[in-house]
Length: 231
Ligand SMILES: [Zn+2]
Image 1 (cartoon, helix red, strand yellow):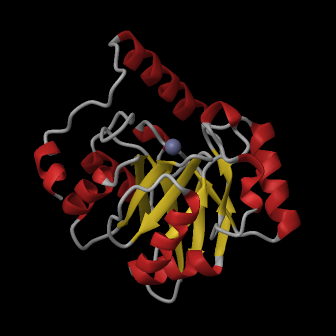
Image 2 (cartoon, rainbow, N blue to C red):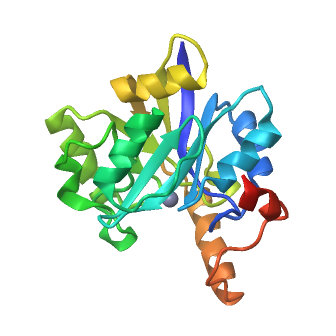
């Protein structure tokens, strides 16, 4: 079967606007089968989302967008792993835990992409389209994937609900299970479906301004923080 996925979504657990529970409902409404909630340097959003999703669709990949010493990398796992900043050590940990590593917006230097480090033999796929990135850096990543044969995924990098699932990746899976999804990502059985949404991006800009006006230099607390600290 073909599973519709959005593998790069933020929530209140970092700088996103929505609660993980709202993201789950939105993903369901826009027909996503699988989502990875990838808050900055924490698996918290995905852990909370999983509690709210239960056993139904969408499947929730345990995810984080880790700011490594080279730049941002999406870490997608069955269950959370420690957040490691050294990419080679992160790769070892990912292998031990069956995780998938995907450099996020690699050529977007404004947002700490890893640049030409995408040539390193550490990555399962590359994010060749990020809805929050400009077309030029997206085309650079897309072109690299085309030339190198690297599997390429398209993601929304949603920070507001209106962005969830606009850009998506189709994953070929035997069954809709987390193990099959992660295995298919490792095998590169993916087809990117890039798309921009003017409304989504406008809402994201508005959310960014709102955060600045309220002086949010740190991430807001979730009511489930206490659970997360012990998770
Ligand atoms: Zn992101």
